[in-house]
Amino acid sequence: MSNKAIVKTVADFIEKNGLLDKDGRYLVGLSGGADSVALLLILKELDYHVEAVHCHFHLRGAESDRDEAFCVSLCRKNKVELHRVHFDTMEYASLHKVSIEMAARDLRYRYFAQLKRDMQANAICVAHHQDDSVETVLMNLIRGTGVKGLAGISPVHGDIIRPLLCISRKDIEEFLLERKQEFVTDSTNLVADAVRNKIRLEVIPLLRQINPSVSQSIAQTALWMNEASRVLDVSLSAMRQTVVSYSDRSPDAVIVDIPALKAQVSPESVLYDILKDFGFSSHQVQQVYSCMGACSGTEFHSPSHQLVIDRGKILVEPVEKELPPTRIIPEEGTYVFGASLKFKLSLMDRNETFQISRAKDCVHLDAAEVRFPLAVRRIKEGDRFHPFGMNGSKLISDYLTDRKLSLFDKRRQLVVVNANDEVLWLVNERIDHKFRIKDNTKKILSIRFSRQRSL
Image (cartoon, rainbow, N blue to C red):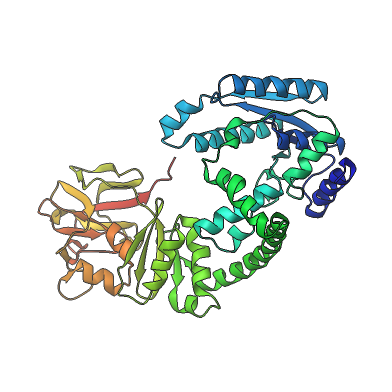
């Protein structure tokens, strides 16, 4: 394509996808390579307000210094403001225990986001092109993927915009050659060591022997899959609403109704769409799906969440921070258990205006029956109490099962016990009958439970 045709192709792609606004202000990631140089020049030619950003990662010695000097010269020549930043990438990778490639990516995009906020820019433009999207599709196929993986690289992802996905690397090189515009080359891209480079330098050339237009064919397929993905998202969103509910006891918990899930057209796809947001892999989702008919209590964990299959439901909650085993309460006062749970104990005389609390989070006990020190702890196997208003004692585990509490709710259930380890209060549930307020009660122990907002 000629320079004029390439610029028009990009302009049409921007307009079709609503990527940029003529009144907007945009940052362009500029490495000095052919792709980013072409992106900067094309957007400038299309009269968009752009400013360049160059990151020096201190990974390639003199070659990195050369890249920075080139970007300074290019921006000066084209009257484009350039923002520069230097990173100790090796130190960051070591500190965060990530690969050099991941460290550079994290540093780059964090700085882009920060600069965008500081400058109040509309978005950040990066130079991914058609061949990058093709490579991404092939990488995803090799690793195993769904519809979204076959869609390749999206033109918009949050604040990141990719205006060059409509043209190939060959188009970019022809554009720069016709303009006699120089660019720099990262020598690490010429070595077939990383997976993407192996696909670029070895796999795609082999595929071109079968079909010379293979890149265009895969790119077109990716565009169709991107449209299909948008349709699928709308459908999945509607199906999610019919199977997902939320717990009153734990606001962060998600409940998936298994019979409602099985009634969907593609239950496993719906389940994956729900669980991927909580860090569960596709392999884990397959395992969860295959276990849905198993006995209650089957558990799975992601880095951030825990999941259990429980009586026809799938329960998902954030991984709970560890609580200390016990909080001793030597006397009346206010006590914090863990990071956010608070118990306030106070003694009062009974008078004519006194009324027994009906609230779940506040109880009144006969102080004469209570022996300090008290303690707050999680329930343990064998705990029993005599629920107020009921006949006889009962295992707390049985009581909670009768109340239809989930496995997670049971695990985090707290009790207040006295010096003899007798249960005074199953917190937010019921007091023990022995410690109730009686007709002859003169002094009252009030216990109020609350959850403090995390800072």
